[in-house]
Length: 164
Ligand code: FES
Image (tube, rainbow, N blue to C red; front, side, top):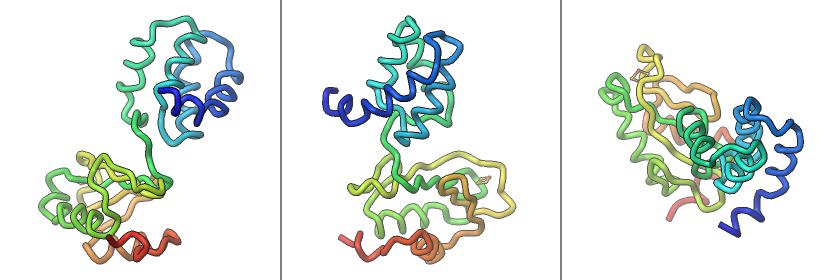
């Protein structure tokens, strides 16, 4: 998409220029690009593929293989709500509902201002402290529906701004 290309072109170019045009650097390029853009814009993957002279499908397959990569835009605060069995039993669905009621986003969505995005994940191996929410790699344990609001407030965001 042309709009996407121009929006992230500087990040894409600065990423590619840091590496030789060889296939073995594709993963490192994708990691850098995701760090800069918070996700992997399609145009970025296309340019990486051209740069290392590899079919786009191959680069795309790598991007979808690794769970750490996102092909859709993520917010400044990326929230992962665990919905594995233990967390589900301890009402992870209520947390997801609370996030929707507060920020107006469902799993897979990002707030319009780009601050928050939400994703549900399977068990992250911390069932003893279920239900668990991870925001930008910080783990929050035994989160309640009111607790998630407190957490959002500690991120320096006024949740009232998001009430619809
Ligand atoms: S089910 Fe959520 S951490 Fe295991």
